Every structure is written in C-alpha cells, then in structure tokens.
Length: 247
Image (cartoon, rainbow, N blue to C red; front, side, top):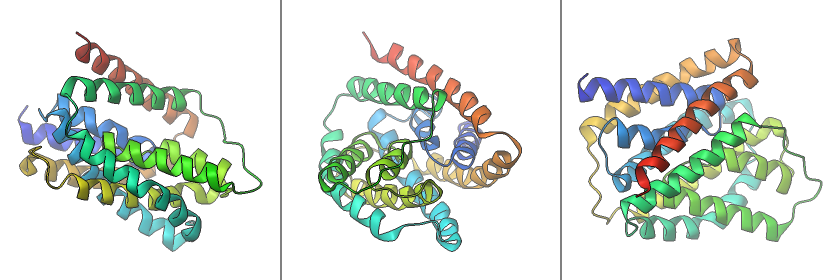
C-alpha cells in the first residue's frame, strides 16, 4: 500500500471517529501519523494540531449555526489555557521521542478507559473561577504538549466546572480546543520538526470527509456501541505505543 493511500485510509478512519464521537476522536491522529506514515513523534504532534484546527473549525461552524456554543464560557475557559498551550508547545520539541511517545500512550490509555467507562458528567451548579482556570490551563498544556484536541477532557470540565448544559458542551469544547490548538501551533512554528505536507494534506482531506460519514454513522449506531468500538481500538493503540516506547 502506497504512502498516499495509507494517508487517505488513516485520515478517513480518524475522521469517522471524530464525526461519530464528537470529542476524543482526534487522539487517533498522532499514532496514525507515527506508525502508518512514518512521522516522528514531534512532527506527528505538530501535524495533529493542524488536523485539530481544521476539523474543529468545520465542526464549530455547524454547532454555531445550531446555537449550541456558549461563546462567553468557552472563551473564558480557553483564555486560561493559552499560555500553558504556548509554553507546552515550545517544550514539546525538546522532549526525546521515546518520552513523548510514552506520554502520549498514557493519555491515549486514559482516553480509551474514559470511552469504555463513560458516564454523563455531573452538572455543576455554580462556576468556580479557580477550578475553571485550573481545568483550562491543564487542557491547554495537554493540547500544546501532545497535539491533541482534548475534547474528552473539555466536555466534562465544561459541564461540571462551568455548568455548561450537556447539549452545548461539545460545541463549546470545540471553541476551546480551537483556541488552544492555534496558540500551540504558533508556538511550534520555529521548531525543527519537519512535517511532510504531501502526506498530511491528503490525510487532512480524508479526515474532513470522514467526519461527515462519522456523523451519519452516529445517527445509526448507539453512542455506547461506538464508544466501545473506538475505545477498544484506542486502548490497543495505547498499549502498542507504550510497548514500543519502553526499553
């Protein structure tokens, strides 16, 4: 299978996951770029930010039209993560590939377990400024360091910390993810990580198209079933990444 075909197939799978799950699907992008397309971990996390930005914008437009974005809450939450995202983006380029891979494997395992054991987050009654700032900063650091959107972290935080209704949490999380990813990508602009655009662009195009198919799939298959499928896949990926990263 040629590299171009691999990029299209991998992008389509990541896109379907994004469209079907709404939050948490983009975490499949980094391992796909590393193990299927030969990107280094540093280049993969940088390229993943590009994918996160484009897919977030695409999805955010739809949520904005539907009125399911809480702009004020989202911008306040995102503001707390901008500096951590920028700092983490710079530091990420200085971390050895093996350590970066292992850190990503841990995050992927946590995301997989969250999918497999997912419960509706408990809705908060009042917004706590310190908790909101801490959650926003943590999400920004994760996005900047590992190149993932972090929607699986943002959605429960928005619901439980900022009391955003569940119906608006996914749309609002896209705003947060987009802001963090833009800052993190800007911070990485001067790094030496080489991103192969000849493979990234087909991957990105397939991911955007796959997201539409994912939305249609979500309308036909129960959310619990989709989470079990993608959660199991992501857990296997996490274990494989950890195995390759450990000496």
